[in-house]
Length: 127
Image (cartoon, rainbow, N blue to C red):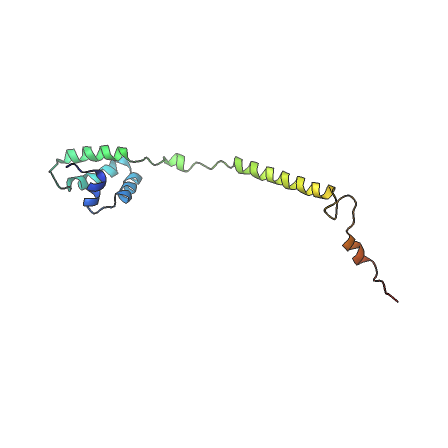
């Protein structure tokens, strides 16, 4: 019965997901050199060293590729965030101006707050 890569690694006592992540992080040649001895230890047959390297090379090519260093270190595009901040500032300013124009704020429409005018007036004494 043929082994899958998952079951083969599990039989060797290796977590397949962790090993795949570790091998994917390595350069291809180093990953092949790391995987070939594991393949040679598999039960069920004796493979030549060239066979294990060939199998390891084919398997390593199936792993997800990590982005190159140039892609990983590319600066983030901050333009969308700048647009969001500008739009937010414009909307906030428009809201404040709207409240002031409707007299909702103490500094809109030459309106003085009743609370301010009462606090400035001298207290009235009742007889």
